[in-house]
Each structure stands twice: as structure tokens, then as C-alpha cells.
Image (cartoon, rainbow, N blue to C red; front, side, top):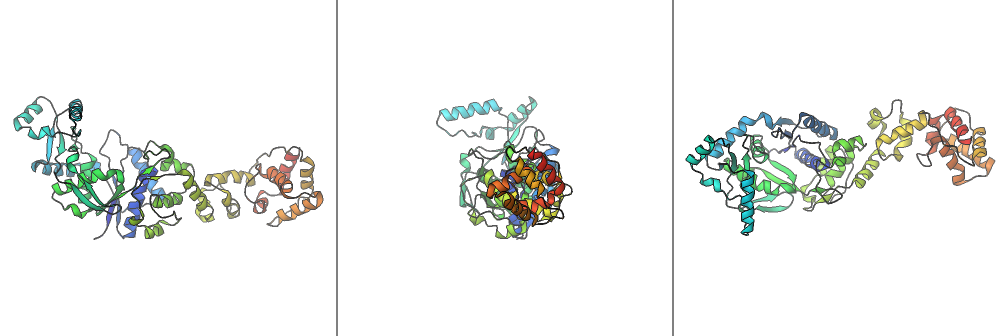
Amino acid sequence: MSVVVRFAPSPTGYLHAGNARPALLNYLFARKMGGKFLLRLDDTDVSRGTPEFAAAIEHDLHWLGLEWDDMFRQSDRLAMYDEAAEKLKKSGRLYPCFESEAELAAKRDQRQKRGLAPIYDRAMLSLTQEQYERAIASGKTPYWRFKLSNTPVVWNDLVSGKREVKLTAISDPVLIRADGSPLYTFTSVVDDLDKGITHVIRGEDHITNTGVQIDIIAALGANPNRIGFAHVPLLTAGDGQKLSKRTDSISLRSLRNDGIEPGAIIAYLAALGSSADPQLLSLHDQSKIFDFKKFSASSARFDLTQLMALNRKLLHKLNFADVQSRLPTGATEAFWLAVRGNLDLLNEARGYWDVVAGTIVPPVIEGEGDYLRKALELLPAEPWNDSTWSDWTNALKAATDRRGKTLYMPLRLALTGEEHGPEMKPLLPLIGRVRVAQRLVIAAS
């Protein structure tokens, strides 16, 4: 059986690391198995979803390199949901309800006072046709609940093994709102069956949803075993709370704007929550080593420090061709090779480009005027190459008897404006004699 998986975001916010992870895991599994990866936009909640968020989700997935084999929107499939709902109504599994939120809250309160679980009491199952018609005539509009089975749902999870959901401990879920719009729990099942989804890969927080949806699959006349499930451990923020769209600092949009490379994010998310160490590999190679057996059932903490370390490691190995289009105009391969080992984020390269091609003004270095004027006097003539820095500092060493930091630090500070940075050996020829001389004069004054 050919594998078909899907990533199904709601366009109600920007993608963050927590929901980009199931997108990546679905993609890697599909590619490993030679199957298909589908993108489904769950956009039936028109009160919260926007076209702008939908476009942002597509942009973020493209940026990560996750290309889908097919894409569809739930808003285009309402007729299919209506047809499935009618089937459930006729079989008695979808029944109308008229209680208000206040009435439901009062019922839950009463059940708790009696020591009972605060689940729905199924009072509307006894509604007669006459009562139903009277409610409609009085202007009430029903919402529709799904009657859950009385037996537990059991499946073999690809991550955590045997799992069980006791449906009797859950309220019959609302599948159709009073305004007629279908909810995710229902539409997701209809789409999965229609599109031939073979595996649903998502977070551990969907375990109860899975039990309910397996029951809906059976009620629609399909084989519940036709879909396999994998529930991966949740990601948490530094405070231990679940990652969410409200955690903007770890939205893909923010990470991208901060200069984090997609390759670093992929390496980190592919391994997070598993026994594997992150590996900076192509998506193709990541798919080859993907394995559900490596994942733990425990939640994993998303650590920006670890992601930054991976980003730094990735930048230090990138070739000029990989970044040329994102470097400042005029930046050369020699420049990239000179500075890449000092970058945490790619956008930091702009500061070094100002050093070699701009008009930075170095600080006046107190007490070093004579030394810097001597450095200007001994400054070699051009052309310059990789040996110029050594030739110049050796001449200064002989003339001033300086060594170590006292020899090098005033020069670095005068030429770059910083006490630390890339090696001066490759940087000096890029700055050029005119800029070096100008900066020495300023720093010595």
C-alpha cells in the first residue's frame, strides 16, 4: 500500500516550531516510504482564519523545503461534509441538540456535585420528533453531536505502542455547529477517507481525538484499521508550557527574520524528542534516517540556544554559492570564507561587509597614538595577499618589541572597530590599503 500522509494546519496564525514539526515528520516519513505528502488547509473557521495566514503557511513550508504533492482547502469541500453528515444522521449516530452554553455549564456543575464526571448526559437522545419540530418552530437552531460507542478504542501507535481511549469517559463531541459549519474532528475524518490517507502523524495531545475519529471512521462504514497513527511527544517552551501560535519568538517567520537557516531548523526538529542527535543533512538524507522507533513518549523542550548552536555550525560549512544571493551586494567568495567562521546568524555578515567595504569610524585608542603612527609608517605597499598581515606585524614586532595582544589588539580595534572577529590574515587584503591608512590616522589622533 502506497503511503499517503497530510499536514493540516488551520490558517489562524503563523506556523511555529511546534506545528512545523509534524509537517516535517509527515514529509520525512512520506519521502522515506516513497509516498505522497499532502497539504490540507483546515479553513472552515471563517471567524478566525485569514487568507494572509494561509499564504504565510505556504511560504513557510516552501522556505523549509517541504514541497507537497497535492493541496486542498476544506472550504471547497462543504458539500462532501454535508453528505457524510446526512449519512450519520440517518444511522442515528448524529443527533440534534438545543441546550445553551449556560444550560450545559449548569449540567456539568450538577454532575460534579454528585461526584460524576462532567460529561454530556445525552439528554437530547430522548428528544421526540414533536419536540424537535416545536423547538425549530420557536426559532431554535440545533447543533449536532456524534453518539460515541460504548466500547474502548484500541490501536497500535507507531511511536508508543498499544493505546486505548475509553469513549464512555468522553462527552459526545459536537460535529456540526448551529450555524451549519462542520468542526475539525469530523471534517478531518471525511478528508482522510476521501484522500486515502494511510497514516496520521501528529502530537501526543491528539490522543483523545484519535479515539473519537476512529469511532467516526467506523460509523461512516470504513475500516478503522485502514489508517495508522503516530503520536509524537509534544514540544514545550522554556517555561514548560506547550508551544503555541502566541509564542511569536519561535514562529518560523520570526526565526527566519532573525537569520536562522532552514537547514538548522530541520536538523533540530527532526531529532527533537528522539534518541538521535541532530544531523545537518539534506531533506533527502534526513528522510533516509527517519525512524519512529527513535522517538520517546515524553515531551521535549525547544531550546533556542541549541538551535543557535546548530545554526552556527551550519553557517560555518556553507559554501559561497549557498549564500551569495543573501549577502550584501558586491560580497565576494573571499569575503565569505574570511567571515563565515565568526557568524552566529547570516545577517551578521553585513557588519563585517561594512568593515571591509564601508566607512566605519574606529575609536580613538588612548595611549596608542605612537604605535599606530608607526604601524602606518610600516604599512606595506599594495598589492596585498594572505602574507601581508604577517609581514606587517613582523615588521612592527621588530620595530617596537611588542608581542601578543599588545601587538595585535590595537591594530584589530583600529581597523575593524571591534576587539574580536575574523582572522586578520584574510580580512586585511579585503579592507585595502586606503581604508587601513585612514583608520590608523583616526585611531591615533
